[in-house]
Length: 212
Image (cartoon, rainbow, N blue to C red; front, side):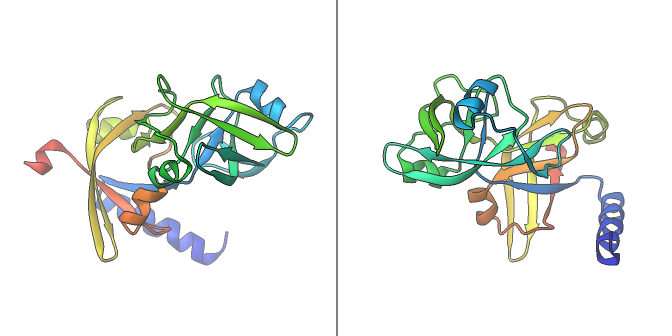
């Protein structure tokens, strides 16, 4: 760790002490979750290789990618996230859904009833996945964070994003506390671009009494 990184960490800690409602913003690019069976079809005899770890424990972006094929177009080089899940799922932004001709609903991860299907293609295989969604914005947080914020699983809050020249308030943000989660709000690329979110942009949780 160099001096610049250390100063950044110290700065973040100080800021969090000054404003306990401060939340790091994580921009979630399009990605794919696969079952073991679908993974083996697309990448036969290939172990899933870690490209980089993600902020949440045990989750990572893999080196493997696939092409999403919709009725009107395709999105190439979409990264597979690990580890494998019980149900395959594709997460894209609204602008991408329009471009490939898919009427994807806005849902929390895993809520796939009625979600449309797309084809996933690699040089070694292809599968059809029923489960294309636009991820509903949400906040991962530990149980201690939830207690500090005064929220519980499934609560809806607002978050003010104070980015340069474009302050934005996002409503309908779902709280997702879990004992091992690391504090981070997830928005997609469309939302991040609209709010001018940069690498070190933070949000501030707005409680109901703050809105009164």
